[in-house]
Length: 373
Image (cartoon, rainbow, N blue to C red):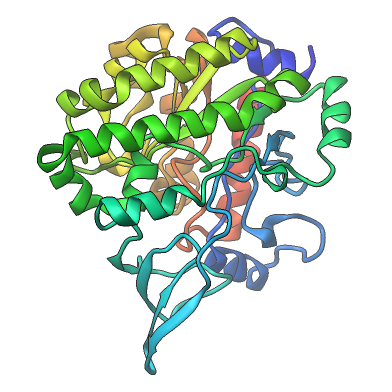
């Protein structure tokens, strides 16, 4: 059974002799720690922090992503607005102004989130101006060597995702245009504008991906939302049903027509109250199942059954505690979920700096033995 065949069966909750081996990546601080602790330099992609497409040192399986450009073209010019010894305030290519700490930054990752100060959409005039940056028909939205990539993927034995990870969401795109607090108010103050933005975003995506759907048979599509915290989602079921349910269904219907059968939602935090609505729209996989927010994959499987595949859910904080904790964590989740199918285990986010290189390698080896069995 090829990796691609196995992947598709797992996501359909069908029995397989093994399960794909994936992880997400590492903090820059983690990479520096592992090098100090003996990770061999130059033998892996760990230093790049991104493990989505595979990692030889960890034995991670290959995936590929059709990384179409879903951003602003042209983007805003990067501009430093203020700077002192500790912070830098700047406008980024997406039009968002942030204040960031200089200290603690390693390989472009920081130990604290930036402070978001302003967003590109402030009113209807700024919205009208922003829309000009989202022409879906621009040739540069496709990689330069797209034709060659499409030809190579036709004979592949590994899965390919339409778009890159974190490339498209319905709520998340509005939040990046308007800001979390402003969008929360806009749901009530100007729902017509919210509906207009969602419709524009949906049309943009459907026009952008149409050539790709004709060139490649993709295996899955991922909606990046990141729409929840530990206390729940940033919007409720009523807002979901009014603003997002039909656009989700519309996008998924088009992707189904193109032969795609697996539709993922990526969100940290606890958006569990929204899961039934996502499933109603056609979503059939949820990840990365943040354990600090209570998204236990064993409990979720009992609640939602085998109609919802699950990826992730291994507590990164437990992996930092040593071998006994690692064994307990893996044994409590992997065997019962493997018996039912529809589960791909990996950390509930990237490897954090608390995880030593020894513990990481022990975790990877123990997980490998379990998934290959």
